Length: 234
Image (tube, rainbow, N blue to C red; front, top):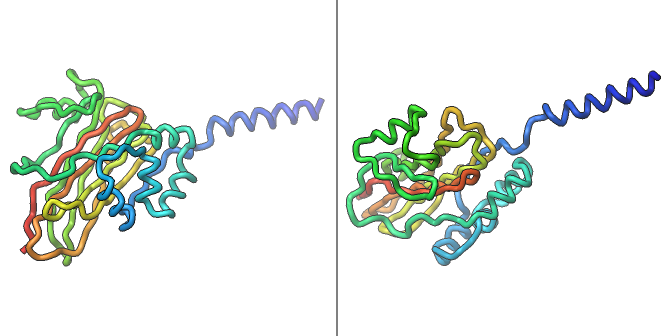
């Protein structure tokens, strides 16, 4: 009778652990694409690759292994099977109007001339959209002897979120120079959780710099991108 009771208590304890143990999928990591990876991406721009292939190509081996160790395998399989969203190849010729850009559940840009839609999203009173991504690119700047670039994004209309990766891509005279990224996996999104990426680079005189923020999510699936205003380093 005592053995039976002990066995029942042990079984109940194991079941309790299964339900209360923290998930390994809640994880965030940032970094910069390797020089070899950045070169490959420039040479193969626009080709169809998955997020998993991107990670093998451009992440450091350390970050690649950390993601595999800390993200739930089923979630990671879902995320890394998605096709990589490249954003735009070259900076726009027209002057960029700074500010966040709204993308809907179909990854289409939402026109919001008076800012009312963004205000509804921020307040949590979304009336015209189901879900999507907000993307913003900060102005490129110079400080501490470095050109600095950054951007951010967040998913709206969904909680929790499977993953969100934000890239800040620095361009110089139209050429894609480097990429900083931040990726969050399996996180609570109430209130909206902002994922930010930032990087820096030694300046070259006479170069026109501009950065592109690219965001891509899974569960819900979405993507969007926007550019910063240009910055001339003399």
